[in-house]
Length: 353
Picture 1 (tube, rainbow, N blue to C red):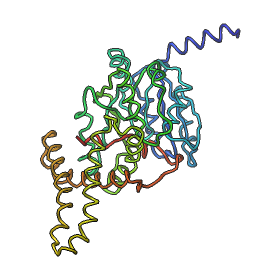
Picture 2: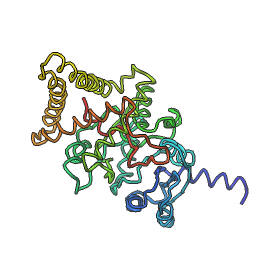
Picture 3: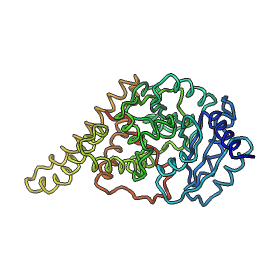
Picture 4: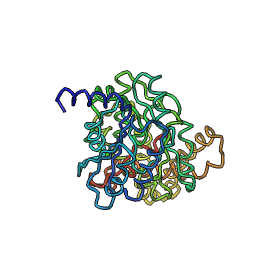
């Protein structure tokens, strides 16, 4: 084959491939087969999209499971160990040939019309960012259903961000924005969307693009740990630009909680000194009241007053976790432990404000 023919074939392939689906992974042998199966079942032409799995040094059978799909998908498997999840996404894009980029997490399931719906919406849009918030699994607990359950239908149209577990953007705009910030361990999708908005592009959310997130926290302790981890991204962004409007609501909420948590500590010796133990109750009451107000607002928006108590509890856990994380007391993770399950996006912060 001549060099000219090789060039022509490469150009033809590039023209045929509409989507490059980028999937970061680390030790996801339990879920990646389900994720890739959902792509095999797409009603989109099989030769019009490619799938690029970027592995972060898995020590289980993630790669072996992924390779089983080589015959049913236009599949490329890459490896880049010991980097943040944003580095995995950027590595996948570097090898992508598609006109559009589709970011999917390995613990997410795409509906059969995921790509075909995205194609229609992308051609009708301005080439900016679009996607959706996650759908929770059908057998989800009260934690998942209360905090995440209605997000795909509550966050519709122009939004501040969409999670990178189901995010679409044209290759041209991605390159113009410089890709994901590889120095961010989490909240890289929020940062990317904020830069897209600053560049004049819309960030749009459509429920039809939602994916089922198998990694949705199902217990209160898992929810707390996830919010504590995501809080590190807010802290990093806040330190970079204290006036960043994109983080304003979350930052103000965190500052409010920090103030009253400090008051809780200070109230004990003060109450002992003045012999007025009612002072100890002031700060907890203020925090509980703020959680209850946010929960009531959330329940009113969703027209589900049964959510008042569970959302109050979740907002309390959210406030404590984000405050601890902002102080640098969150659980630290090495880049190699960052997976789509644990390092997705701001996630629960979508319920604040």
